[in-house]
Image 1: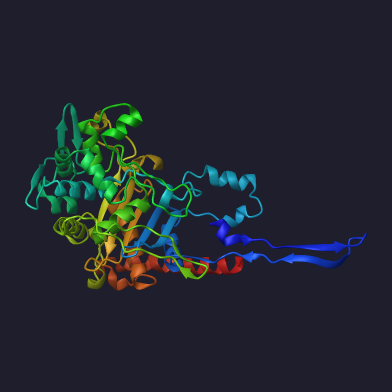
Image 2: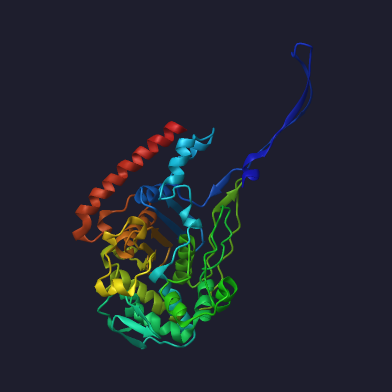
Length: 437
């Protein structure tokens, strides 16, 4: 929006004498000042998120589920844009380019990641709408399924036993979705994914916004010249294989599920003092009972006895959150490695560890904000991404540093320590901004 911000330059014609002295002004055209643009971003929340992400290679998007306004859109690690104002040195530029955490990339909209188990929300809704599962449908998880000559494993090697839809979300059982996906098929899953905002480029005034990939049979044939296989569907069912999504898309997906409406993200609040018109999101056309079933599963992820993210729950009854964890592999695990024991993420080089993801919203009873967090090579969504999402939601809901009372009693000592560290970091950041200004 450079043209809007810059406006247009004025000019004047003058008469000078032989030595260059101005004798008179012949003509003047006044310049037109550029228009002020106000973003939807809440600066305080944005700064909190940036401080919370710190030096991690990560991204976080926070969206108002009722209006689509982006409250925070953050990529880490950050860099000082002032370095580029008068020409950056080759040494400084090389340092940024050679950083394996890629500070110059805006991961929140440019990054495309396998969404992992956060995608189970899509598979579940596709199966429900097709009438292929009900609240009573169960599948037995022994820790794997076999399709042809290939074995597809659940993240829990011993299996989850018999689970229904709500329990499968709560415990993030892979086998349930392997079984369901084979019945519903990839085309219906892909159609639901696009309905929820995946596999499309959202119209925002930012550069290089990724479209991600929401694959189907035609996509694979056009892209790779090969037929879609059952194994592709099984992988896609849990957000692996060809499926790719950005943190922005995952936040939009979560906002749409939380409200049942086609929420569209927006970044501009006003131009030249005039508010930008925002249309009310239209209904997605999904059966409310279907959505309620998925939302119950997301609630149990945070608050159920076996919830994968129960350690990141909010205990304040007015701000209870719902969510879904995700952990996506970035390397192939061979049969030989499984036979001798899968190498722990802790024993792998940083860039071979799993990505950690989390999507969620709060308050559960009256959704206001949805959040998506991706921590590159963060190992696990429950341990790396969910705690960040909780802090971000609490910051947005309370308008400041999250209150200790919102955390489980057993965690408050540890959390108080890092919240105090965040306060110091934010104070230092504020001083630096004042100095630069």
